[in-house]
Length: 118
Image 1 (spheres, rainbow, N blue to C red):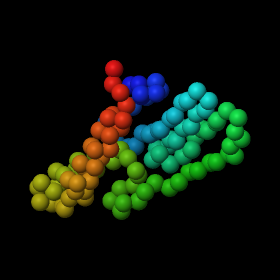
Image 2: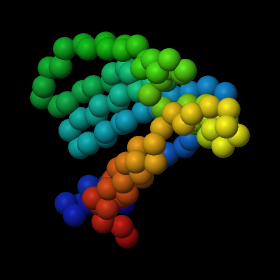
Image 3: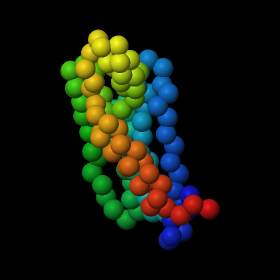
Image 4: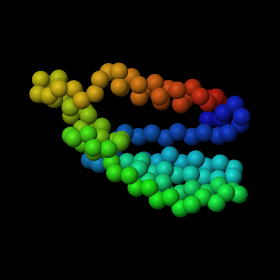
């Protein structure tokens, strides 16, 4: 995609990781710098460099969010799907609401709407 200012934007998403969280990353590659936030739970600053700026080494390795039934910030879709199945069978109560699911879709749609499509 290309923004109104001519910047190129690329989004890649996947929720199809078998049995565990794979790496997630936000990487910004710009004309005069780059930043990458990654790690299994998007909890690590892996790289940062901006032309003309001295950036101190920041090695943040935050712990995964702990929700009791699972840990992490992303890619626990297998457990969420299992919860939906158990809820439909009357074996559990739902872990998330329709409003929370709608908000995720709204954020993704906003990301796409913020750039001009070719």
